[in-house]
Structures are given as C-alpha cells and as structure tokens.
Figure 1 (cartoon, rainbow, N blue to C red):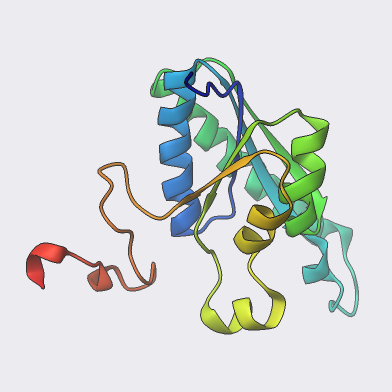
Figure 2: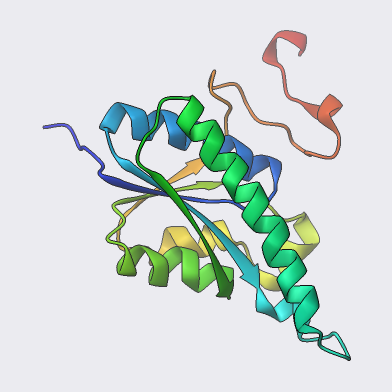
Length: 168
C-alpha cells in the first residue's frame, strides 16, 4: 500500500535549502492531491537583544515576509496547485515547525531543507532540521537535492561550490 500524504508542510526561511524543499514539496503535493502549507517562523529571539524594542521593526519584517510568502503561493499555483496556504508564526522555529504547527494542522508530512545555518550556528544553537526529525510525530523528508536529484550546493553563498560528479 502506498502512503498518500494529504497535508504537507514546508518550512520557508529564505535559505537556498528551503527553496529546494519548497520546489520538491510542490511536486509531492501535486502527486498526492494534497494541501500545501507554507510556514515562515519569525524567531522572536532575534529581537531580544534590541535595546529599544520597536514594534515597527517586527511589523516591517512581517510585511516583508508576507510578500515573500505570497510569491511562493503564486509559484505553487502556477505549477498547478490549487490547495495552498501560508502562515507566519512568531516564536522558536524548532518547536513551531517540529511540534506545534504540525499538531494544530494535522500535518502528515514535513519537508524541510537540510540546513539553513552555517557550521558555527549549528554548533551553538543546533539545527532546526535535526530537532524536527527527532520530535515530529509525522514523516519528515529532509531535502538535500534539487528537482533532478542532483546534489545541492554546499554553500549557497558560493554557487561555484556545487558538487558535480561529472567534474570529479
């Protein structure tokens, strides 16, 4: 019996890895005739060190992300999806993506990029992806390749570092 997913979540954080996850999530969602949920989490810890906390700053970040999420929805719709939505949440990305949002929305598949952090950030605060794979109560697909199943860029800031087995 083949598993059919009905409610697919993809975490969007602006990284190259999240972009890969989104592209694959669109295809998986189409094949499964499912609902695609796009989630961006604004990490409230980023605002804790701002000496004069300004709600206008949070509003500006939110407005920017709304526009970005609307663009993702449009891309998904142009690809043929009709059942797609987005949300912007505030809090700790790990728990929102890995536990709270999937539970509240009956998600049965989370698709997430391999990592959106550099090595130092992973060491200090831990990987959201690693946490999600440990705590999620549904299937988690960690996306490491593009739509052609070619290895993703090692470093999204340096596209020339793309691994290409034909050049080895």
